[in-house]
Image (cartoon, rainbow, N blue to C red; front, top):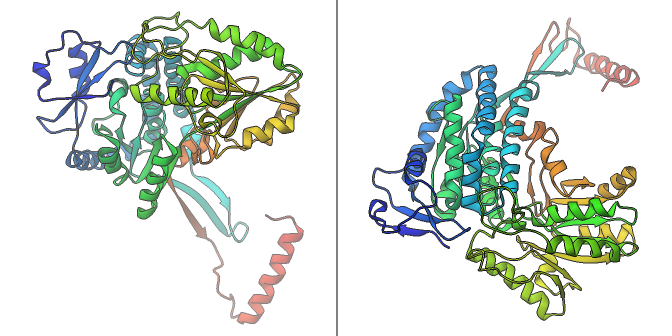
Amino acid sequence: MAPETLADPETDPTATYAVDPALARRLTSLVVCAPRPQTVLTHTPMTGAPLAALPMSTVEDVDVAFAGARAAQRSWERTELAHRSRVLLRFHDLVLSGQVELLDLIQLESGKARAHAFEEVADTAIVARHYARRAYGYLRPRRRQGLFPLLSQAVEVRHPKGVVGIVSPWNYPLSMAITDAIPALLAGNAVVLRPDTQTALTALKAVALLREAGLPEGVLQVVLGDGPTIGQAVVDRGDYVCFTGSTATGRSVAESAARRLVGVSLELGGKNTMYVAADADLDRAVEGAVRACFSSAGQLCVSVERLAVHEDVAEAFLQRFVPAVQQLRLGPELAYGTEMGTLVSAAQLERVVAHVEDARSRGARVLTGGIARPDLGPYFYEPTVLTDVTPEMACRHEETFGPVVSVYVVDSDAEAVALANDSEYGLNASVWTRDVARGRRIAAAIKAGTVNINEGYAAAWGSVAAPMGGMKDSGLSRRHGEEGIRKYTEVQNITAQHVLGFGPPFGMSDEAWATTLTLALSVMKRLGRR
């Protein structure tokens, strides 16, 4: 259900809200907006019930948010890194201890099952702990080799960019809003965040927990509004921009940032392939495939939408996989037990239906699923497995972003790699084999930013000390690891020269000095000097 504009939320005639209006008012008080803003009413995709009346920011409010963030950033940058780390460690504890309310908000706003909502809680805690513990090692000044041994002493120093603009999506409302902000904040930046309106309460709850953990007021500002206006205003003002969303919008964000010569991090679309090799443990592969294809109802950038199965095990795999998909429990419950939730909106449902019906009309077979479930909620759609998918079908190359996977039988590792690489995207992939060394060789041939062996997506995603991001049309830069925090810094080279300068010493002629330097360079090469 699309957001609905309200003239006055206090006179909203709707009888029952899915979220306590008092909680919504406390959270929305954190939004930078005018005293009497325009409001938008959001609804939960689980049942269609109203969620909250959200205040909308204006472009002028974005200016106010950036001005406040710049003022707060100056003192935040001067705060000791150890103190900033303690704030994030307290936030880690608050996320875990307050997870019930977070889980409810994630489910109510995005529609996903509770187990998939917990992935976001765990991810946020892991990222907070990792950067709080490792930030000093990532950011400390580093001695670098100077021009002349001992005489030239170079030190690499890192400074925060300033104010980072983050535009986050609806599909992972906690992870995508906050885990990109955590390293930016630890590096000494302030942040202006524009979460998607549909899932704003989750992001605001996380901001409230950061405030409770000790983050100074003003260091993390939140604005709300549509992407073309408010999202673009954030992009146009950030000293660095972090965007997660569609490839089409990502191109526009990159162009806007390039015109201002500011850096940008983009995680965009994916058409991810999982390969089940002939020697795979099929029971493990089936369980992994179900999670990889249908977590968050397939509304996950790293979700698997293509299954490449070796012909030697294809029949045995499908005999296990299709019944496992059919047995998934769907529902809108705010509790553990259901295994797949709902699509987030009518637009997402329409896209999924269009892809499945296009494939069906062109000769694809539906092995299971392929129908909407309005009896469960307005946007539920059964997990769907297709086969006989051909290149002219939309679901062959386009990202569906829903609970639909296509099965392709391949005769070799090389054919599986070719299928995985036959895409404009390069975000994630998965390889299942009992021979991990072989799996690594296959993975290295796949043009994707992350490749999981004997797991669908969680192993690489959860290994936050290692980088994560996309190749080709799936994005630029990386989150996680040292790159995930250093991207938010400006690097500076400070080099001190001792004893001798660079002019000819002791009255030496330029020619004699050049001869001396030539000899010195040759000696350094023979000594293995790098």
